Length: 77
Image 1 (cartoon, rainbow, N blue to C red):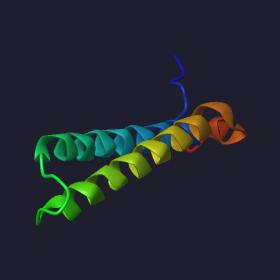
Image 2 (cartoon, rainbow, N blue to C red):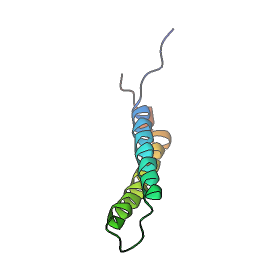
Image 3 (spheres, rainbow, N blue to C red):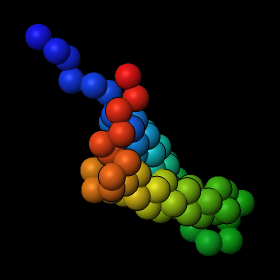
């Protein structure tokens, strides 16, 4: 029985999953902070929100590249 080969698509989807988990973590930290505008920790919450949006956007792009592009079919091992 021949095992299925590992492709670049698998690695891209794994990177997308990790980026999505990081984005979810940042989103949880942002939602849990509860600091309003003008408070000292508001900048930290705002940066967490920005990181969450960027990480989720990167996750979507990586997952799309792994599933829909021809790179997903390139065999690594």
